[in-house]
Image 1 (cartoon, rainbow, N blue to C red):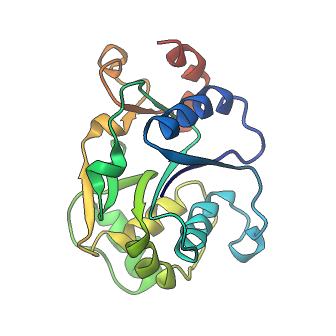
Image 2 (cartoon, rainbow, N blue to C red):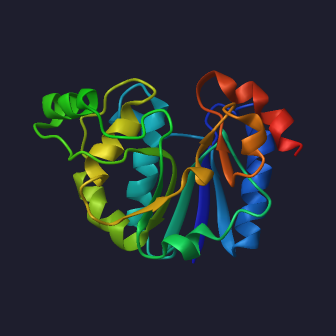
Length: 210
């Protein structure tokens, strides 16, 4: 069984546009859909609700019903013809390159060395806003997700990159699946998933009309 899940913490206004496309995608790919609106274990992670991504991975790893999870940020829009990512990624952990930081850089490596005592190898860096996760790998990774859980909007993205980059089990999707709005708006019309990170969420209603 397959599951599409997104985090809508605080009843985000723009989520009414994105969640409808996630529901349609789940229906088209024979998946269940789960909209998470509360973070009951936030005290385990600190003040930032972004850490709910880690909590969802742990919850997924502890169950037996679903075999694949597509975890997607509520500030992303999927095209109507977005392909079946469950089938594409199969038994690998699917991720897409982060256009804001496409490569592991020295600043990230120094941060990892300071916080975790080691640093990942050079290579691509992903955006955790979209992950296709097989149950096998969730169970392999979940025991390592023990922190430290820092505050800040990018902390969870950096943490998951540190934990996953060297696991040898990633399926790298093209930037068509994590296109950053509003870069090259006309080009965005041909992309599969558009990410409205940062201050660009106000653009979601206009893009949702395409």
